[in-house]
Length: 257
Image 1 (cartoon, one colour):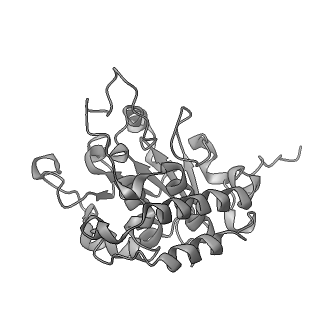
Image 2: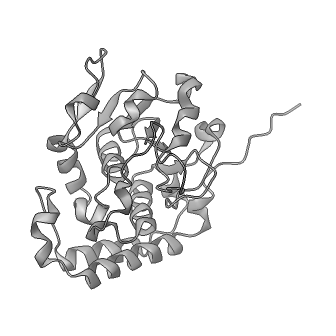
Image 3: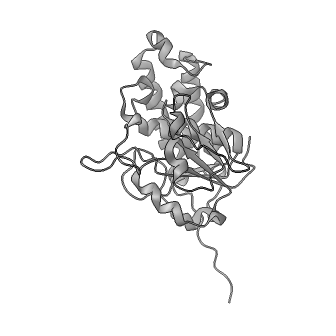
């Protein structure tokens, strides 16, 4: 599986997401909004939202070409990568794997998905919201490892994961300017993926596959020590991939004359 499309902008609900309101659409081939982020800019293509996302918070009308992606679509996509338990059961990761599978992008650029919640400040662009990634959940014990996993799965498919924020983040993706998105190299040609297979094999050894996506309904059969071991394996795989994966922007080409 290789990249077949261009740059996908993935929007979450952190306060800094509003900076993209005036960005030209020409820099992005597809805009994927998560939950309330469809309100940030009206030219989104896909809204990825869970089944319990309130009806009154959904768009009441869709423009031509816009689609709402629910669990009947994003769960099977996540299952192609081992399932939501291993992926991390919060929508930034869920939407990322769906976009990776469905859109086959060359770059996934995340904004508003840093999972940092500063005290005494608005947690989301619309005010105070629930810090979903920080809830007590067996799939979210190590957000950095979960982001490393997504980054490595994407890299194997020729897709670079980056973030368009420059502050603190629980994502391990490199921070880049949107102006360099067109020059980002194919990470599959640069990184060492020797430890990737080991992490995947460990997941398969434990066998924590839940095709329905409702892993919380089977919580009794999951061993926290196994989940932590898998997270450790993904962090090791990221380290083994080398600096090339994190330094994914190509140097600027110098014109003659």
